[in-house]
Length: 425
Image (cartoon, rainbow, N blue to C red; front, side, top):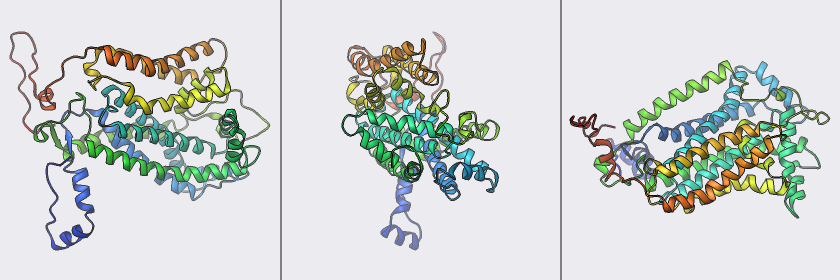
């Protein structure tokens, strides 16, 4: 999409450089003049928040790696040394550990924003698929990072999760042996996980680049789901309108982040991870980090080990085909009243799965987990395709500008509110 303005170098040096490496022009067209729909709300700020959080995780992770020792005998002690002896090591570790949780909070909000406003529909299918790939890479990175402190929950979490691959016919045992680097979780496992945990964030950054490139090629969705018809009326420049909104949201998000770091840094972690790994003592209740709990509940809801593994991975894989499951001609749930109700129920179901994942697999938790797992797939594979094809959506506004500038009637017989000035965000 063409922007509102074009970068024009003013000095001879700038023109010379731009002719040979037009990086300033690229930044100007992508982050300053790039046109964004004028009706974007604060749910659209989480993309920028995630970009900043990715950079923060990479920077803090690199510094922590300078002091961490990937050895089964020394890993736990090196983490304690970071906390006690490295200058501001406690801050770096708490930023990194809680940053992972903040990352997942932001990405889950980002995903549900896409679900609500239909951001996966044409022509944004590739953007959505790249987003799901980023989620998978994030989950792999976070799991391997959780193992590195080599506490009790790290060790036993790695043992339980990696053992799941043994359920795969024929090649399962070979995959587990390769992941372990031997015949049990130990020193080779820790070295492999450390290497992959260090590498994967850079892969995530590369896919994020593709994600943003695809987004800028087809343009952003918006709360109405109506395409841009007049770039001058329907859009505003990315800077200062979107950058100011993103900046304000980022400050608010970092206030919450700072609260966790400085006041309750261990709230989102597990107490057992402050005990060094002991292969001879099994924790009473093995659980992953909170952001894996919905998928952990799905895994345990299926009686068969192989069935549980397939269901857990299918819960993510089904998101890849979402653009083709949704047959609605309207993107935004603001104009799909029936499906909006089902989507709210789906969101509650996902939260319920997270809660069930934190509970022991016994008693009435088991049938409730199975019901919640059934509803997860029932919603995506049946409710979404059927409702999207039979529902009669509400009328859409003629344009983005109309949805922003339309008169709002306060009471019958009273004049509407005056529209905002042209160019207002």
